[in-house]
Length: 353
Image (cartoon, rainbow, N blue to C red; front, top):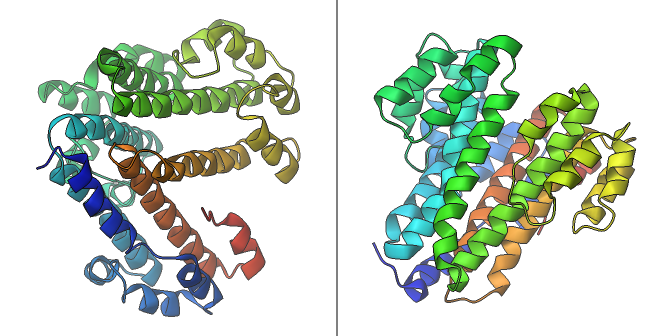
């Protein structure tokens, strides 16, 4: 492991050069079916994982998606394994979001009564929660069993989940539990990072986390308005310490009559353009359209990190988001080919940065 940013980022530049470029994605887009798409992908870095996955999956699309998932997890884990010292600590914070994502995936799977096989296809194990641990969580009889298992492991993630177990039992909704998990992650990360704010690398990570908090709060506001969540329950759903969205902004916007009114409340923020795009793309700006555009917004911000100091954590962040963007595009293309979507419609869903 190495804590020298010049060495780390030289490795990252080499990895960046092997990413699939736009002409290649457009070639995939022009293919007639998922079979020919798979043939092309087998000639890339994804080939090994797709070939291995095909032996376990019953469909071509299943093999491709499983191969893509495994490749992403291995790539992220490989980056984490090659860094040491402060860079490793910062990267553990950034990649720790995948632990949170994986826990939510398990909770949603148990809540929906999905099988281990179905849920494990969505795991991206790159940090503390490995795939065997995540599968063991899915083997528990219910959500309480999942939390009890985390307690036996003395996992750092069990306290926020345990604290909201009674809420889940009363409401039969995972919302409060998931927000508590997000709050725990951000509060813990920012508490550590504030100790080193004289360091540019700490500042970069803090800025990213605070932007993500804003985006989660905006999406939650839309959910509150769309589902008419009572005023007394709204405050608990706010995640503090965002970049621009404060508590009073959150509660004020959450009282809007509809989603169009919400957009107006954020006209003076950095998110006005992406929200306007969502409003234009979908009548009233549906939650799914906003989520997709916010994902694109974060990817664009992440990729822009390549323009920052090359002797910092910035290029690593840039690569993480570029790789995620690549896998998102590949999934879109493959699923669209199976669904026989027209090429212009597929093109609209792709994210090019």
